[in-house]
Image (cartoon, rainbow, N blue to C red; front, side, top):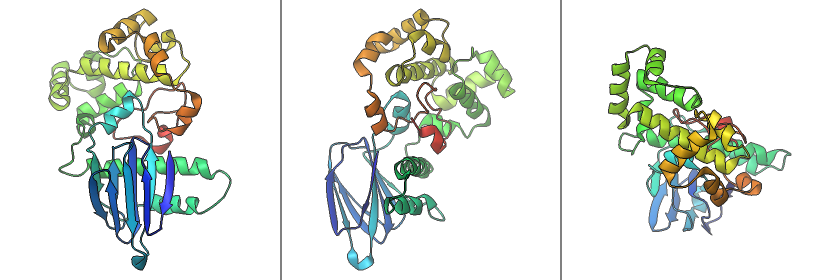
Length: 290
């Protein structure tokens, strides 16, 4: 993850991260990201999912305009659930009342205080979460089904339980009791809002968690199985192979990330060996830490 203040007349660079965020801090900022062009007023942001493209940011000295660039190297199955619905370029309006995080990021970038890098990581992650919330709140944005479903009092709390505790021996009956509704009501409402039966979603979520843990931790397959709700390594291995066409060990060998690679990116998950973050309405910034 990288962040840079752009206050020269013109700044050009090649985006090397999966997500590129440009925020106009003051004045009018003109951006060209790949083949897309956008003009931003103060507080507005451009969020691009185009990696490996040239980014040109033009500011106007007469307006004292300046911008912030943050690159996020998001990775993993859980992260894909957040990033995949985004368009190539999203223009995000300014948050009502402004975004105090921007001032804090700018102050850190202009300082040389010990701990600066750690603080910037947290602030940049908070900025991304805030930007995604603003985008998904727009009436015409392609909001993911899981994000929209969190507004439902029954399905929302069911998703939260699944995301928080995938290792629990959940059934439709136990989740219905926890939600205070009948089995039929929960099953019907979940399928209607999520376009997928509840137990199929639970299986998908567990395997996504397993997939990320395989590539970002040293946990054994047996330990991962227990964390994501399977009785044994052989049980999770069979489900994983059926879903992805490859055994867990082979997937780990092919996609294992080195520690320094993990430190470079935002994996939308918590500290090493913890469960990948839940996606209930997007996480608190500390949950984004690796």
